[in-house]
Length: 85
Image 1: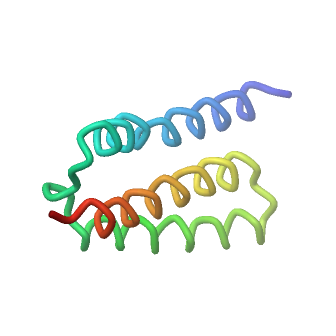
Image 2 (image 1 turned 180 degrees about the vertical axis):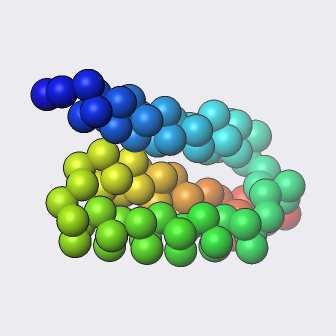
């Protein structure tokens, strides 16, 4: 693995973990009222498009990061509908 691959995988890791604090906070508080549904739909759509691109070119850092981000985004959307009061 060369330095470019290492940078790609590190960037993938950092991008993937950005949603974990929000998912955790939403889960713990059982409140998703402050989350923008439109933003979450845009993020989910964006990650699906990036995922298709990554798969087409077999770019593993893109595939890994966007798979994780997509799953976390979908989870936040589920929380948005599940935790309504």
